[in-house]
Length: 513
Image 1: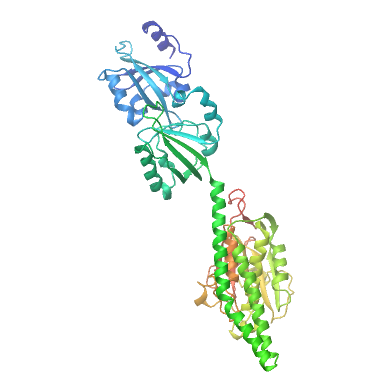
Image 2: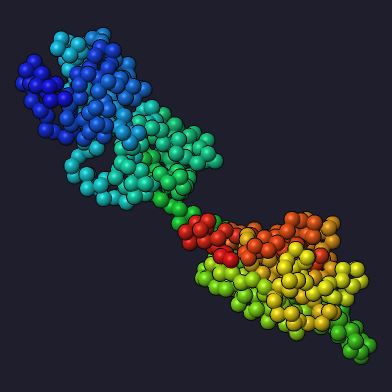
């Protein structure tokens, strides 16, 4: 390189080592091969000098600008000054002005080209420079072909892209596929209709591959503007869109609650009115007992429907807690006093909404005690040996204490698994014909059931980003954290599957067994 500098000093009149970081000299053959690159090349295009020498300059020029550059090098064009885009090492493009000497430099077998950076931001008046550099909104300028010629520095904070790395590319390539057709139509209308000034909301890909919601306002620039054709002001509205989604979800749940209440409570209320009227006419109190049962059913319906209406899709108060502690708390309010025993065989740490997880466990426990009573199990021939873990788990006693309730009592097992945790019982199980319907809203096999208990369980689990599955005895054994394999019992078996802390996204719910 030093010998080349000496040759330049000797044969190029007035040439000296350039000190400006926004320009450099090249020696380029007529076919575009770079023979020499000046010291300021890395400052302008981010490529080392040795990496540029020997490459084809035309390949580094934006495809839309290659013809005029090639014409200037081959002396076809009358103008020797070409403004074009050149690819930077980051993948984006920088705007430059290249001046090609008319005469060939015989010492190099090519032409001397002076390249000077003329980015779009240089055309903005100085008094607006602070706004562009420190404004939180993203300012984008596109040319008549719909390609980016400038983006303000806020592109780094808002989207994670290095400023200039998107120059020469179409912004439509970053739009979410589900929004692209709509945005494309409005974008090209704004380019072709100067009076159009649409406002769009759409999802845009960040440098990390995530999606953010942008609100963009477009405006056509004057026809003689040296900057570009279209000015786009964008702001991140992801938080607002999230609030809107939560509000929409809440309203839908409230509408659902009002509809169900008006329909499903009409019959119990009719029973109450009829029972009270009969008691008055006959002077009897027995009909009032029917009314009391109807009142209890209304109370249960209201409680569960209010839960569905207020559930929401996110977590209200995410915290870390023990699975065993929330299971025992749920047992006290949902099943304690029934002829049933809770066995917590394996604990786990959980990050999530403790209140909602307790409610989900309460509904699972209530489902077990109401649908899997010992009498029903015996009638169906599913006798329990007190070992919910089955033959595939060691020792036959998940609790490990050997004690427990009598053979007639129902046993409900809660234990951590490789995937999360499960709740199982040794009752009569679930009819195979009903397995696909148990989580449907309003589905029940009891005359006095509401059909919303397992629907609430599903809502709570999915609000954490997890899933709940109904396992059957014929399914594969379930892996436990200690390496044992649990055979699904003959009774009901629900498994909640969730990522562990290492696999979960930051601040997302997890279960660590």
